[in-house]
Image 1: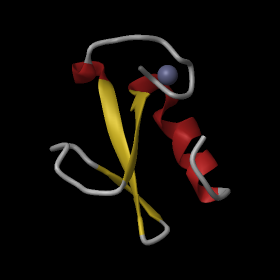
Image 2: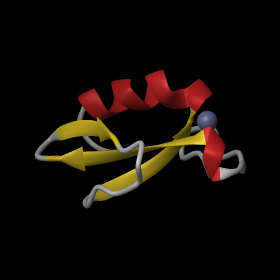
Image 3: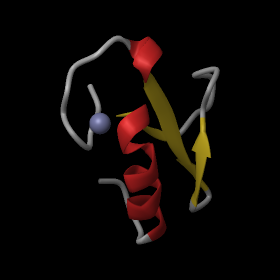
Image 4: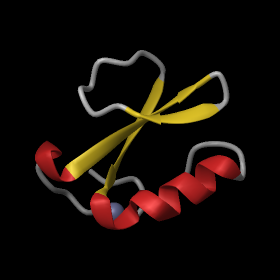
Amino acid sequence: MCVVCRKRMPKDNLLRLVMISGKMVEDRQCKLQGRGTYVCKDCEELAKKNFKRGGLI
Ligand SMILES: [Zn+2]
């Protein structure tokens, strides 16, 4: 599920974002440890802006 628009969709359509040491990293292999969240491609830019403002959505 995308945390921004809350639509359900296959994981193939979602991008995992992980916060590491205050930076947001795209976890394309789903291997990174840390606070992760999933967003769809439509919401990727919005999610990144929200990360920059500090904190997960
Ligand atoms: Zn979305």
